[in-house]
Image (cartoon, rainbow, N blue to C red; front, side):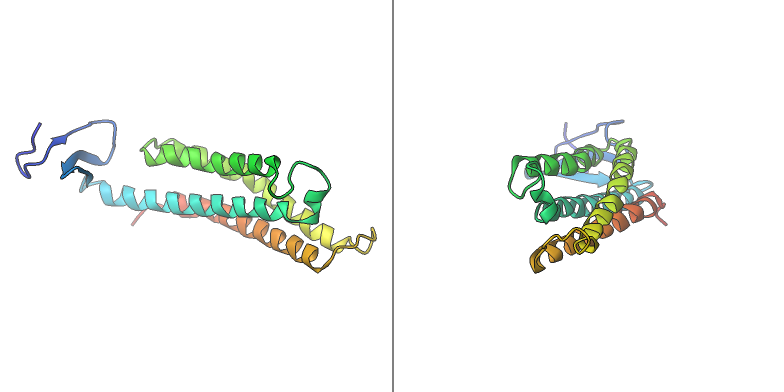
Length: 181
């Protein structure tokens, strides 16, 4: 089918892409045309959800990597840096954010609420991880643990990233739920 206005190949997918009129090809590159009534508000909302979800997922994955560098990871075999357990945690943590985000990018609007539930689930873990890291730093004298300077810095860094992840997780809700003006 040919679009008479531009001469490009065009087709409409009503109901599949809400807020979009159609998809038209221009020299092999697909371009989306925004619906003037709904497009700008929905796109800014979508950008906010994508930005804040990627930020939350990135901080959480960085937190998991930093935890694998702490002396607490040396206690068991599962989360040492470079181990299969560390990679499993990264896949599970990052995938729990990124799989619903990919579906949300394909205009499955319900995935925004799934991302909100995932975010709420991981919000429980962030303060617990921070308390464990800061508690391990403060209890070193009590249990006569001989943490070196780098071990203390790794615990402090992991705890700070846990607090940053918690803050971004809390801010995700007002930033992604507010309506565009």
